[in-house]
Every structure is written in structure tokens, then in C-alpha cells.
Image (tube, rainbow, N blue to C red; front, top):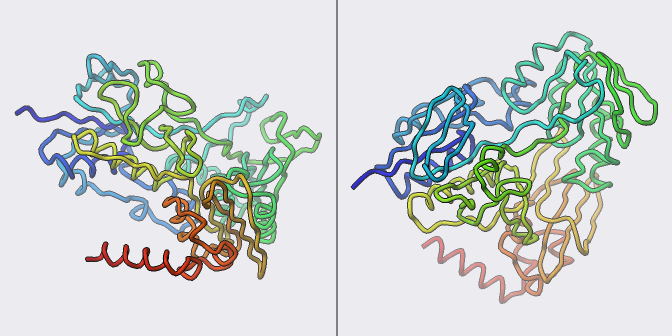
Length: 416
């Protein structure tokens, strides 16, 4: 019997998950991984911690060379994929190499978005903050007392600002939207996070978009100006799907996949930041560029590629982090009816509709956020819950006596 040839583009969370999924079902197939970066398998979310000194080079790696060797994987680093032939089942690389495959996973991630702001090309000291190379480039630009302007107040920009507070620099975050962290927090939670960071010395210009740049100055639409010595571009990302689109794959914002990671192209799966699947909290199609989702999507795709029954249908947007000691966590959809609790520097807002919990925001205190996440993933009916109690304190006491017995019996059965 001829061994299956598996080809994986990308060696981050989704690619590693795919390797593990394949090897759970097929120990003998040939697995090759192509990575555009030459850094090895590292954890991209940790680049801000490397910048602040919390993580060293060894701590950046989440799978070493032993992982690839023990799983019989050929790793090709610093090789960029440029063209896909789904009918001929081959992938062409930028250096002219051609790799044949039987089944392919596209897990090429995303790239920083470059906003079309006049004068941006004149800024010489600028960098995205998306990769290990970007982090090293930024660190090399920093000089004592430098003024750093971060364009973008999303998670990437905010984590970069946090890291820079450990440096001898002045930091200003510019966000054209009415609040920072707009994709994950509402107005009240975002204001709490911003106030906390301001007390730590981070300056903000919010709700006033940059209209133009010169080499060391940003001019805002209001007419205000901000001088800087270093510019960090953190204005979002774009999924790396151009190769798949050119090959004819069905795409929206990302390449469209089913629960097993299959694309519309024969023999081609996708996972991670470039893939668009179903958000189980809304039932809508979405790109959920989050590490845990990428890992689980990749594993499901790997099992499916190897012929095993597999699927990952519990994907939801989940964020849980802390910025300068201020914790916050969010999950699911922020729409529909909601209940709000405030107290002791903490804010909690739970969203619900259709008879179930659909999302939440927790700021200042994110304890037990995982319970809410589980309720959303499990689509737990609210008719088995005391909603007021679960808002105040998520625990089994919020369930009816009958539902508590069912859940406990389920846990005992799983443990056997």
C-alpha cells in the first residue's frame, strides 16, 4: 500500500495540531511542513513578553526539533508557498521548488494590515508587531527616552504598549475608533482598561484617526499632532489566502471551511488565522484568529486528512489576558439581551438569547470565566439555570437540582 503524502503549510498552532491529528490516525504517512519563517516553531502570542523580558528565547518555543523528528516530519523552513495546483496536487515554492501531495493543510496564518495613510512611506523607523522578527526590529529601534506611537488599540497594540512600559520610552496608543479593544470590550470595560493603563504611564488618543504622517509626526483628523521617534503598526491583520483564492477556493474574509477543515478544493484543508468557520455562539461564519481554536481546528483537519471521523464544531472567539495587572476575559457574541454586574473594581456583562448564554465580558476580575465559556460551548439551556445566580457566581448552585444531578452523573461517567 502506497503511503499517503501529507503537506502542511505553516508550522504554528494549526500546523502542529494537524501533525498530531494525522499521527493519531496514520503513523506511516509521509508528512512535510513548509514554513515561510526560519525561526522554528514558536508561540507568536509571546512576542510582547519577549520584548518586556518576561520570556527568553527558549521560552518562545512550544515544540522543539524532537517533536518533528519523533513524528517523522520533514520541516522546510524559510520557504514560501506561491502557487497551488489542486488538480495536479502540487505546491510551488518561491525558490522554484515543487512539492507533490495527496492531502494538504493550508495553515499560513495572517499578515499585518498596512493602512493606506498618506505619508506612511516616509516613516523610516516603523515596524509591524506580528512576528519574532518584528519584535527584534522594534527593540533595535528603541533608544532611551524615545517616543513610541502605536497605531492601533486592539489586543496587539495594547500588549505591545504593556511591554514598552518596561523600557525607558514614552508610549502613546492611537485608536481611531471610539474605544480601545473595540473587538472584545464594550465602552465601560474598555474605559476601565484604558484608565488602568494611563495610571501606568501609557498615553492614548482615542476616537481621532490619523490623517497623515511625515517622518516623525502624525497629524490627526482633528488637527492635533503627535511627534514620535518609532511607529508601531498594529492596525489589524489580513488572512494569507491569496494562493488559495487564485487556485479557486471559496473565500470570504478567510478561506471557507467545514467543521473538519475541508475547503472547496479537492484534497485541501485549512485551519487557523486564515480559515473561516462557524462561530458556535452565533451560528455565523467568522475568522476566529485565536491560538486554542487554531490548535483544535488543525487537529480536526489532521484526523480528517488521515481518514478518521473528525470535526471541531465548538469554535468561539475567546480572549483571556491581563494588561499591566488588569485582567479581562471575553467569549462568544456580544449581542442580544444582557445583564450587568459591577463592584469592587470589577465589571461583568453576560449576553443571552434564544434560551441560552451567548457571550460575556469580564473586566477587573476574570475568575471562573471558564465556566461561562463552557456554558456557551455546551449551549446550556437557560431554563435549567437561575440566571441571576449564575451572573453573580457561576457554580453548580445556579442549576436546578435535576440538572445538577445530570451534570454530576455525566462527570462521574466520564471519569470511569
